[in-house]
Length: 216
Image (tube, rainbow, N blue to C red):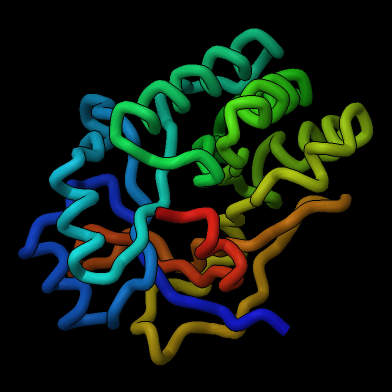
C-alpha cells in the first residue's frame, strides 16, 4: 500500500516567514500547492524565485490553475488547459508535471469542460489534475459523465478531493487517508483535509506518495 505524505497549499506567496510558520507550527511539507498566476484578491502568482526557494527546502511544488469561474463547455476547457500549459512552461515546469484545475464547489461544471481540459493537456506531456469537491456542487456528476464519454478521464486524471474536512492538523496528527471520491472510477491521490489555518495562511493535505513523481 502506498505511503501517505503530508503537505500544504496556499494562495499567498511562500516567503521565509510563511515557511517558518508552517515548519514551527505544523511540520515539514513534502509538497506545497501554489497558483500559477495572480488573481486579484484571490491568489498570488507563483514565481521562479519562489520555486527555487521551495526546492532548496526539499519541498516539491504542486501547480494549480485558477483563472476561471465556471467550468462549462469544451472550448473553455481547452482554453484553460492551453493557458495552464503556457504558465507552466513560463515557470520552467517540465513535462510530466501534473497541473491542477481549481474547480470550486460553487462553480457550474459540465462533462464537456472536463474533457476539454483533459484532452487538451494530454498531448502537451503535462498530466491533468483537478481539485474538486465530490460532495457539494456539480463536479461529481459531470466528472462521471466525462468518464463515460472518454475513459482517459478515469485513467489519466489525478483527483484532489476537498472532502471530508476534519480540519487543520500538525503533520504528526494528520488523519488516516480517507478522501471522498466521485461515484465512478478515479485516481484520488490528494486530499485537502484542513482549510484556512488560523496560525499560518495555509491548508493541510495528505497525498498518495505516487503523486511525487508528477511534482517538481
